[in-house]
Length: 393
Image 1 (cartoon, one colour):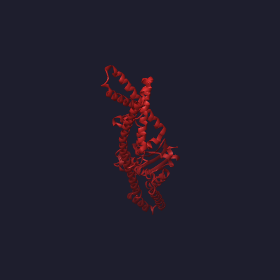
Image 2 (cartoon, rainbow, N blue to C red):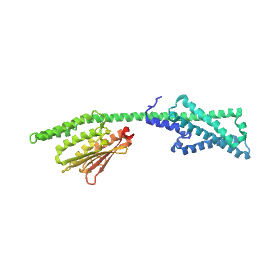
Image 3 (cartoon, one colour):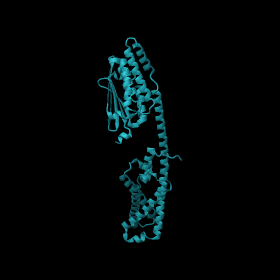
Image 4 (cartoon, one colour):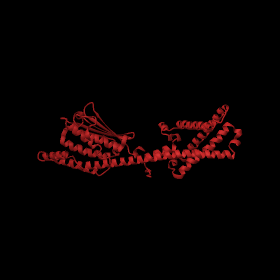
């Protein structure tokens, strides 16, 4: 039988739920309500009532009419006393054992579910006799025959609970196996995405590279200083991009440096048509993020927002930390959703792929939103959860 990975949070959650759940929750119908003290007390009452009616039915046919109510009341008190005694003993043992209860396995696990209900049967019956007729305690409890009968009852109750929990254990193992397989599938998907990213990082868009080199060649004679500066910026950008392709994570400051090199390069090509500002807090700059996460957004803003606009425009990148998330917003004053690639709220293939990547890396904790600015242009906002070492501060 495959054992679940011990570090799997889903498995630990399932084990914790099983260790603290009510026996009635073994029936799927009763799992519809969230666990809680009130729910468990009500479930124990329902179990006790069921036992009372069951034992009453066993004896009722042999009783006279005037004895029925007395027998029903006695069965009710005994069943409730035993049920709540078992309930309390499980609650006390769960409190005393704490997280160690979730790790009990094998014969210790079986002994736990045999001993606790057995003790609850004797304690509950003792309490019931005290409540019904304290004077007859020596007749109804301290007799060998009575003790033997309730020993059998306690074993039967324990075996019933143990059998029920064995069924639950099998169901739990199946869930753990599924959770482990899902965890592996997600890990494989994440690694595939990272491998794909590294391949993309190792490639420079041919048109971008050709156009930049063509611009440099065209400037060699009329403006050699500008051509030299253009090549220097291209080298800076290539160095930053290739360096990021070797890392699985980078500081936000490093990502901004790569974007700055790219924007400086584009500024030499577009001239006064391109303006940009970067606003970033010191705390945000020190955070670690996957590389090349913001670069596609900036490239999309230029190619689909500013370049189609005759007078160009401005790009504003703002990064700050708010509560337990890093918020990065990249806004432009370009043509907005007018271009074909950005005609849909999803923002085209590039941003759609970026949204899928964020979902694969962060799940529901990360998000990407795209809005059109009232004054023109588009704003793309990324919300990424902080690493654990920052959230614990």
